[in-house]
Length: 424
Figure 1 (cartoon, rainbow, N blue to C red):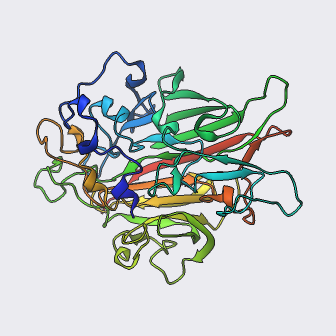
Figure 2: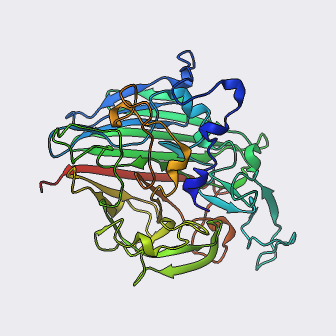
């Protein structure tokens, strides 16, 4: 089952409560809700213009120029911001407290192997506490992106805003969605000169009243759906055309400095095994069209789904900010280079996303001019830098996803996206 077909636990437009009298263009935007306030900033050299809102700390728009000098909006989203509060699609938002899928929605502190047995033990027989996150994926067999009300589906608070950066914070209470300990998280989005977009995420586990600090898993990410053509119609005579039919991501060229993927089962949960990408359709160590081998990725995005929704492990497993990959569109000439301090990248190539019928933004060929235009299958690419998927349930893996505790271990996530134009 693909994430696209579920659209990450999305409330499909056709399945929304009838009390909303909902239609894609019939839900009134609530301009009185402060969490839906739109903040628009530009980089110092005006090469990037972007917008965010507090709900989900979500990126709403991201404009850069293509090779024709046309400003393209490169991220999927909604013109009507109220849609973000009723359609859970993680569009442009922060994922947490734990990004990705947790098998059975259960984990333990300290980490132990997740089995169906009620008994969990560690090699050194330490006391184990088992926690349960509400199940919201795979027909009740997994918890996805922190459960039904993850960080993407909550109202963050504005902390600071300047001409070129904005910061939101979220207070996640002890026990919410089953996670132990209260966690304070800050995200700062910065638009820098030279076409650079920086994202910094900081989390700290707060102490109890008695001064002790609990231990809890934290794995965050951001969830932008990129299309470096801005859903533009590059076959039209007008270079600025958007058109009512979105192109696919098949011609996008992807490169990832990753030599392994995390094996996943039919419901897209990590099995604990790793796969060498050599000789497989998952080998993007050299620049490769996303569509070149996608037909070979049978069940790659779940049982019965052909495509990509997998966790790639970078060859460099260090925690320093280093270049880890790139995405490039020959049609638009736009190239996005990715530097990150994370050890893995979840790639979702938007298989099955068309089933959701999500209305496209006016900047991307939708809106009033084309009210029936929607985001189609394989028309976007989500690149989510993170730690190893479901590592909390794989104690033998060389990752530590537990934070807080006596040492007050803090969480830090950073990625920098550099945009340039390559002339054809």
